[in-house]
Length: 229
View 1 (cartoon, helix red, strand yellow):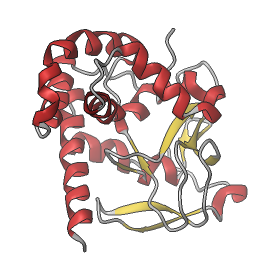
View 2 (tube, rainbow, N blue to C red):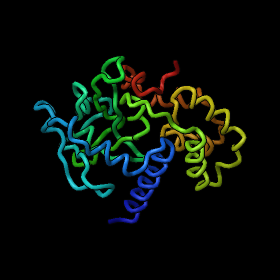
View 3 (spheres, helix red, strand yellow):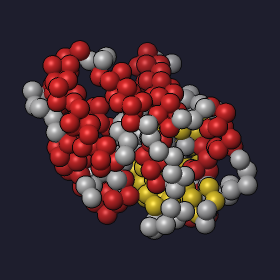
View 4 (cartoon, rainbow, N blue to C red):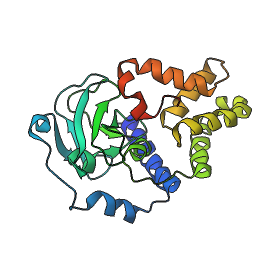
């Protein structure tokens, strides 16, 4: 395993732990939610040849792409008629997600489809930000703002050159929280990119940047909850 891969996996595992803190979940609670068998179904035939289960370096088993997907493409369904497919059971969390869950209807228990939020190569593990997944799965577990802010500050503390804009951080966090109800993992990278350009970040900029970067996901931006309401 390369050093870069080791570092990336470590960052993913740390952020997974922070996700659990933010939502008040123990590992035992997560195991119970993910492993219960009463709501699991097989992947529907039209999608079964798109993905497969393999051993994951992140945790246990993971879901891997058997072919390439373009950004904005429907990958697989994750929930059908209130039942979870393997995508709803085995997709692991990452600080660098490549898919996002989108509800197909307004009801909290509507079906959920997984869309690529960047280009995905064949044999790449499919990864989610569990915060985003929680915002669409209807379980309605609120995120603790204080814990979420601590996650952001811990990640920013690794980049001392961003601290000169610390005074600008709180109003930006306030605005992003009002839009999402949590802090998307993309927020920290966006903030760092903005500060490295010498810009003073603002929440409107975050929303517009996400919309621009995901222009081909315009129909599902509401589902991603990145569009201002």
